[in-house]
Image (spheres, rainbow, N blue to C red):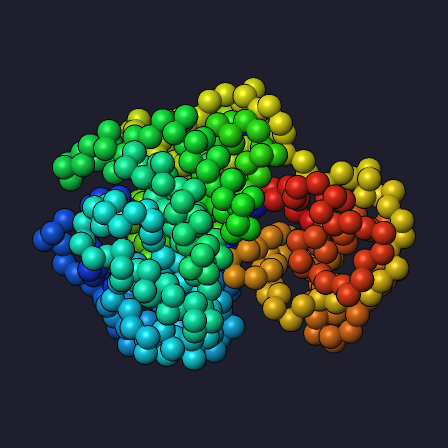
Amino acid sequence: MSYNQKKLYSAPTSLNLEITDKCNVKCRHCYNFWREDGYKKESMTKERFDQLLDQIVDSGIFHIVLTGGEPFLNFKMLEYACSQLVKNNISISINSNLMVTSVDMIKRLCSVGVDHILTSLTSCEEETNDYLVQRKGAFKKIVKNIESAIKNNIRISVNMIVCKNNKNHVYQTGKFVRELGCQKIFGTRTVPPVSTQYGIEPSEFKITKEDILYVLDQLVRVKEDTGIMIGTLVSYPLCLLGDLEKYKDFVGRGCPAQAGHRMSLNANGESHCCVHEEKSYGNVFEIGIRKVYHNMANWHDKSYRNPKCCGCKYIDICESGCRMSALGYFGSMNAQDPLMTDKNNFTKHFQFIDEDKLSNETELKTNFIVPQRLRFRKEKGFYLVNIQWANTIEVNNEIAEFLIKFQRTKKPFTLKEFGKEKKNVLMKLFIKRVVESDEVHNVDVEEFCGLSLDPSKVL
């Protein structure tokens, strides 16, 4: 495959960290399928977390997702971890099924800086939801605690794992959670186990290409009707979508594992590149985060891309779809994503920024500022700029050092200071929220930038 070499990072930019692998439910779609009933349960301790925190800070990791299992089952540790991470300028989010949560817990987490929780609700129909999570009464508990969190100023996003049981419930579930006050709903496909030795056949997870497009159509409609944000936590091959203008909310997801951004850690320190992965790349308490990350190189150097994707203009965004689905269905990390169609299947292409229109725009007469929320990490030959939460992009040395200077002084700058010949770069930074301005003259950003920037290009 004739791909250009990707820029490899010194460490991940975000981390999924288990606080405990204990859980109060056994969802039919759980990605921890390989943890059998006799599996020895592990929970993070304060001593172990403090050791890990030193590594996280030293590695320059920007964002931590605290997860499980069910992290609220190890609440004191969850609360402690949140407080320490926030003190070290590391942004946080929590993944929880919200079934064992109390109002007091929510208030305590809010007080230490938690502002977002991702939860699961598989259907707005109680019977279907409780069947899929295999716990009667789960629906009522989840809804009650969603409301409690929102009342206490914690944003809630909902992940809906879609399968044959609930594929017709997506629109109504989106409306339902929007009415509760949730900000986003994800329509995420199931990923099959990599082995049948656990008694779970991949056929239980199969959902057709037509089913997926129907699910996405419902999500697009509920966004139009209610304003709720939509997305997916497991990427869809872009050739499946075809009309990338219609399905624009599902284009930029890609595969965080292949992109080099993410790593997952069990409570005992064992590591995975993808949360659906059984394979460990070493224990961070034995060899450290950087060495573990280095051991994941095949995920990051394009080794796992499907050969049929060679020549596709979207390969650096799509990354051949979900590699764990390819492994689960076909036994190889290089196999096709089962939802793949053909690189010639596009009916409407993704509208990246129009470079010619950008360079011909009326002069920008405004002051720009560099937000204090930006975080920077020096890499070999470039910088990583964290915009917010887990959203990180690559920026060349010259521009990054300019931004660092003006962030440090808190002074505004003009296009003249930035360099008129780099006007297009400045506008890209503005659209990506790397820089901000009170007023940008003669520029309608939505119309001006098309749908989005190409996330595979270094600014």
